[in-house]
Image: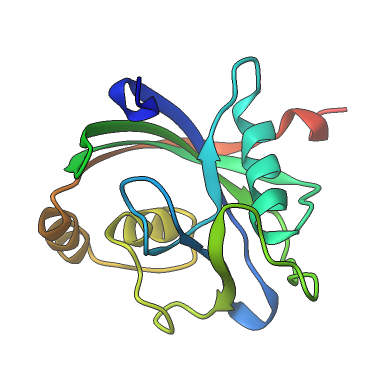
Length: 170
């Protein structure tokens, strides 16, 4: 069974970098392969969403995030070469900037970059996510047009207030 044959719970971490940059990884697998995306991936059985976001960020970027906040949950649906997919993505924002460790190559990614918004071609889903995280200000019409062009339906369920990661609750 393909892991995309069911609703796939996943988590991502918006990881600010130095001097107004954001951390991106080049996806090599899945429906968005070949694109620069925010670090993230599937939640393992028994794993909390925030733990998955931190684990994926560490595996893909080498950055060990000590504090983050849940800001939204997204549902992505679409089609790719292997059929339909439905992702349930928990979006977390690191509470401070992190610099990439030198020489780190990343697990299961084709590259890692810290770039300012506009310096890399953004995936259509990242337009909404970066706007919701407060790091960009894309217009709703621009986002809708980009998602439609990619054949993606995206529902955003925004968190009101700040929800701290479990490790930060003491």
